[in-house]
Length: 306
Image 1 (cartoon, rainbow, N blue to C red):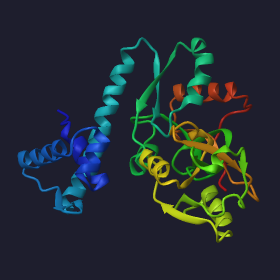
Image 2 (image 1 turned 90 degrees about the horizontal axis):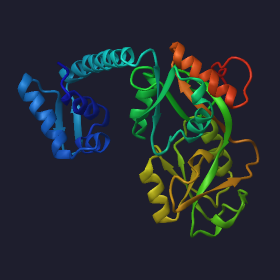
Image 3 (image 1 turned 180 degrees about the vertical axis):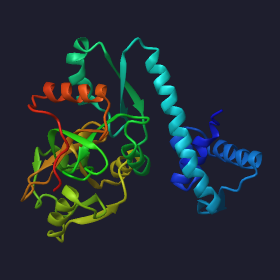
């Protein structure tokens, strides 16, 4: 029988912290510690080395978690197939949604057409905005979640999943509503002088292009961030810092407003869907319908490498 405590063990292995695991699983830190501790005692295992800075897998723990992930996925796939067999031939396509990836555009498109595809049911699956968890979900699309709507750079996910680009996503800045720049329709780099702007650490793609352009202006103070989550937006609202943002995040935080930037050169990502390389017929049908509803022609396919 599948032991639900494995969820806490696997999440703790990913986050390296019982506190972060509790946040991800929506339970308290003591509850996480209890689940992991009782699991270890019951089976005579030492999966983690504990310290004040967090938890780290032991050698035995690393091997165990690798096997446990496979077991969890197998159990979830068995459950999924059983659920599908009980829906009279209606295939379920699961769209992962979160605060930063709400999928509103996809839902709006599907609502126009849902009545014509009664053989497909769209199910929304809640997911975290933790970057490590999101990367794991994308790597295993088709297991727990079939689709994610997000912004992405051309070619970035080509070896991991297929992509359907529906729109361009020019980078902008999120500005606290009480900031003077929040009243502007568009901003130039000159307008941004004297501000502090939070931006992802150098990695690749449009974000790095934005960084290159901003670094040419010494009067702009760039503050590195590791990832985006709601806390990032909260911090900017409280501190008055600006934040490199995307149109898809308009309205994410009530105290921040997106303002377009007149970049000296294009700084654009794509907005669309990520889906499995070996997508099921139902997923492919869904992707084709979303593409058609968006006005795209031709067969959806992964974007070429950049």
